Length: 412
Image 1 (tube, rainbow, N blue to C red):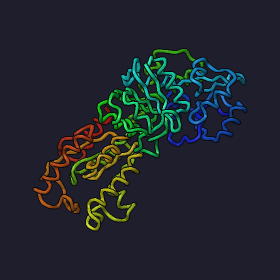
Image 2: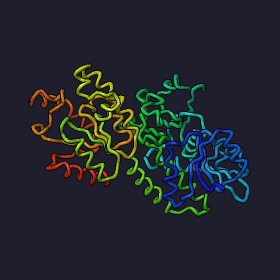
Image 3: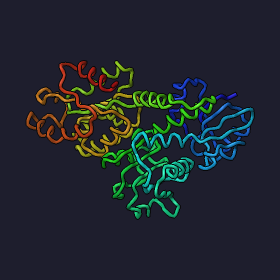
Image 4: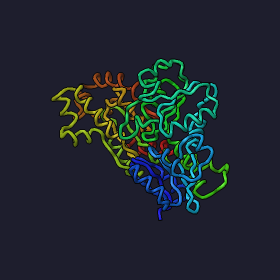
């Protein structure tokens, strides 16, 4: 008999087993299945309790013999508990959703809200916004009265909530709407948690808006589901559990991304950090060399810098989708805005500084023109390094000292 797990269509990106293991449930598994398979699974009732994710939350509602009032009002079920052959359906997403907003300081009361999407999570978002006293809630869909073409007519929208999979791994870097066209926007939430920061969230951060990503929602709803799985009473300790798991996941999942001038020691430092933390090390220049069978220097000499920058962006799209890695970027990776977004979507970024006179230049065509050339390059790039980085690492006596400083700041 299956004990506990998550049912859905595509589950390769799921963090749920990690979360439930931290809650003490070692019997939690992933069950990827077709709709027909899910309906059969529900009919056979050969499980103790499961969570349900897209696209089967409304099917789960129909499959349950008893449904909580909350789930009925929302119109979808994401938690099913088998009690002596009767399936009880609940919706813990609404608990997770409201926690996500409150944790980010996004106020819904009295606000005009756009909810992107019409699936099960959209129903949860709409229900939560009603409960939180939004002044108006407008649902946006591809074929609805309000769609992704005429949505920009609603210029006075104040909150945008994305419940669609647009921008989710592996299709990173896509946003469902252009938020720059909403003049009164003050908050953006995205239920996607992989990547940690979608393009929608990154765009909102650039505007200085309050933002909420889906990881806090995922963890909070999982804690509530675990409570229902084992018939536990609500407790103040639940919030402590949520924060503890969030801190753990953010630490485990986030990449450590190193930027800085060519020859500042990113690769050397990155390898030391990688070894000390037991994480995979990825050097962007080495990745390019292996994939394209030419070094960055060879590409620049033969095809020019512009072509190399195009290739570099392609490489960063691949590399920055990874999790729990140490990534060393090329010296000019921060030049393009898209690259800066890629670096930040799943990573904590460190800018490694070094005195210009000490920068290595051998084999680096863009920094081999002497000290004056290096200074000009530095003047252009330094503001971009500072803009991208979460932490700036001052010049260190050794690569080991630099690595230790990065680890110390990352762990905190």
